[in-house]
Image 1 (cartoon, rainbow, N blue to C red):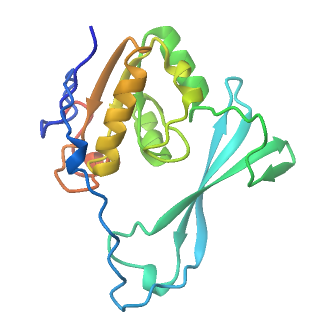
Image 2: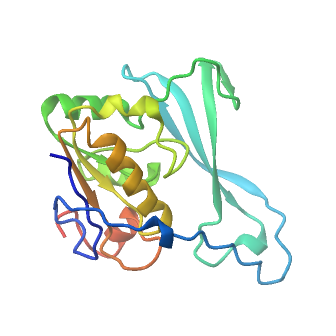
Image 3: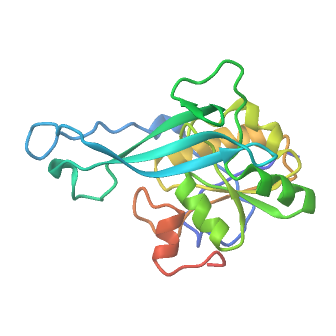
Length: 219
């Protein structure tokens, strides 16, 4: 029987099978407001973190690079003026920006995910490497995908076959759209699928915000 999902403002990390009732007609993309000065800042991007993606054998095949704007006009606000770029490893001493022909997508922390599925342990699919690393630090088998919340590659669907899967969503429009997309595509292949939201009701809250509020994975 297909899993039905509902996103509600429940204490989010109580593990419920829930039904999803989102009318995407009411999911509107907000226009970005102009900068307070009326002039868009000239970005000065600086690399902050480089997240390695490995294949099943632990060989690095890709990096996701987090960059933040260091320009004075970018500092402040929610502190998240950032972008992500991808680098691909074509041989041990060569990294390129252009995706090589025939490149096969991999999950973040792929060896741990494979081991968890084989052992019947729960796999946590997060939005972003930062949250995946924080979940892993708590002893969870956690992963994510490159290319953003709403771009889960078709290549990766079979990689989660048979998983007891928890999808941790950000509390924003992209997170809700991700819920619809992943439910439709993953429920036919996983053993069980659960969708969770962070406890915080603030827009754009994520798993890290949930932990930073003092909540735990049991809350």
